[in-house]
Length: 129
Image (tube, rainbow, N blue to C red; front, side, top):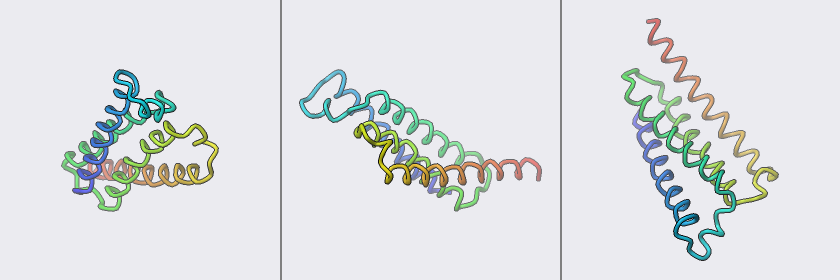
């Protein structure tokens, strides 16, 4: 289950990096940096999503329920890759038209959905037992 803490740490790191990118892009413009962030609103979506995923990972870890290791891996991986979709999209105006990103997005959603639903099922099992 410790992979959830690693996933949370990765999301927290990306959260801080995205915060600094947004800060430099809007309030302390540096030639090249502010032009690098093409879609500021999408970067905000990524920033918020990284925070939520970090909280989910910590919450699941701290729930006191013995969670399946594979489900934890799915949440940690999907929890990081889902916000990363928004991060990449913030830097690439043609993101949503590229097949490789559509495949990446689909895989990320599948992995995270499997992990989250498996953990939800485990929580229900825990309550019923």
